[in-house]
Image (cartoon, rainbow, N blue to C red; front, top):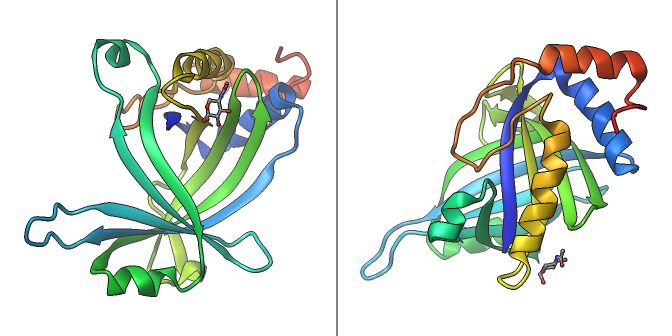
Amino acid sequence: MECVVQGIIETKHVEALEILLQGLCGVHRESLRVHELCLKSVPNLGLVSSEIRLLCDLEQPEPTWTVRHVGGALRGAGADQISVLVRNMMESKVSKNALRLFYALGYKLDHELLRVGFTFQFHRGAQITVTVSSVNKMLKLHSTDEAVPVTPGIQLVEVTAPASSENYTEVVAAMSSFCEYLAPLLHLSKPGVSTGVVPTAAAAAASLMSDGGGTAL
Ligand SMILES: *[C@@H]1O[C@H](CO)[C@@H](O)[C@H](O)[C@H]1NC(C)=O
């Protein structure tokens, strides 16, 4: 399972967010450049359609491929009350001919994206990953060199952490308290709950840029 929250930030405040994250995490950012192919299986007799994502990490000297399946979210009264989404997720490394394999299995390409940005990975009560990226669409099939932003001037921020049915309460608590530090710059909520940019972002970014993030804590 994984715990996840998402939010958006204006590109002009991303540098301030990076300074804040650097100060909070004490690690350096890693560059992110991922080609994401969303595949859907064609519903067949007795089979419901399913969706998987093939991710190609273009930052590596030799691109590496991962297949990811996002399953159902945790349900029930307890799940509604928490501000973090807890969902099933399966990820596995695959070889570079995986796309051909999934086509042969009856999957069709639904859409593809190129995510460009950076991540911070660190331990803070849980193994947290913060991803800040612009989401781009391709003008021509698979042409990652000709990608244009889906939402110009806006970037997506995603905070995730691995969890299990035994420890998710602990992971949710660790993630929630970490997200509070980011609150002046952006609002993070469950995926699909659109919240927009926060009104305090410009002031918070200006103060981070002037003191270099050193006093963020
Ligand atoms: C919770 O469990 C997951 C899956 O076993 C593990 O990867 C993660 O590190 C655990 N987190 C904590 C905070 O114990």
